[in-house]
Image (cartoon, rainbow, N blue to C red; front, top):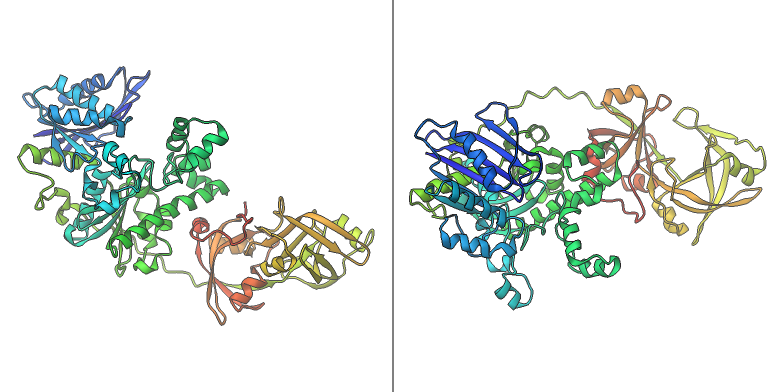
Length: 637
């Protein structure tokens, strides 16, 4: 029995032909740019490489006719398509399960167009095209919203005027239901536990994204709402925002309500924050030091983390967290960030398994002793469509309590990932710690003002970094609220004057000092300097120095690091502290040493000469820590 699964978008058509008897996918593909010049068909048969075919498809009917012609060529004489299952985006509150399509169902789908004006018309076009081309073939509607119809009232009701809810259907519906159903039941099979005993948080993270709380097999809450705009941050959609921004932006920009809605749907999210909607581009740019992409990844992961935490509370715990769809299946970085700092859930991520789970590799990515399992699953909405279609043709209901999908069978759906043995860890290399007190670097011009023309600094003692020294000379620094005397000058001279202080010093002086890498002073604050021969006011140059490790190139090679990488460092001493997001500076002139300011050193009970260990080298470590506590601070470029 050959079943055709169709997913009609506004200008696209995804299809899959499935042989139910052999449980094999015969063909699949995508028709893109329907109704536009340059329609392209990507057609794949069996496991062979996909063919790219240029065609003219004026509408969905023409596209489906072309696809059917290609599919029928694959079938033996006398065989045809036995039934067609359609993915329907919005079923409102009328459809809580998949149904055979008749005239009444078709009318109901049409009446629901106001709730899904971009999607339901395309879905209807697919249904009507099949009726025209294959009038005797039964059709089944599988609704994205149906899975979420089990939500309790407190989860789906919006606190708005009652007549809005009763007359216009304003409530939470949720989407990606077919995907959430598939992955939650597949996870149950992978864990070899009944779905009725599991609390699962399903994270469908692609260009569109939603999170669902699945308690004992039923959706009890989900992040998308009346429309797919609500919830977590997405590729082009904003996710949750204050509705008050709409009239505010209307008043301030003159944009109409529909224009603002269009921006929130198609120009916001990651695209709005970075200029890119594809997370692969954003991760790449982050690795190159693009601060917009770094901050956007923080926002993205934090929005997922909030929903995971909320749904763990809603279900009184969680047994498994599953990641699926394009980003969820292929971004170890996003997965790690979304579940970081969740020790209270008993999550113990296995970094090697997490890195291995990409490009179709599925499995549990937590350690065996992890109380909450984290699982990566490749979603397969078409499989649900096919199995629901077959069940209805056989007179069975997919909504029945005893109904089971084939992908729930633990013997058929999962083989644990196997990794090559890890290489023995190299012995740790201790890093000396240097506590950096407040100090000043002076330019030649400012040195002349404070100490007299042509004045030369007098070395007091050499510093650990070659060529640098602490001078005998000191200055007084004056801020709006206070002053600090006898601040040591470090030599040699620099191109621009820079004053490095601690947060405690900033409070005393009454200045806002951004957290910066040394030398990055553009846009920073200023204060007054006093020396024996004069005074001057600098307008920028006051910073809190970003915690960092100096490395010779040979040290960097041993650690496998590059200049401006970020690492985690654990210190010893009386109080063991792990410092996140430590900047690495590599230069032929440097010697190995970690620099902390006095506030950080005091908090960790560290002194000059103590030792630290690099425990993780990770360009992405910057993303796993909270924003710096200084309002005007930013990450180093």
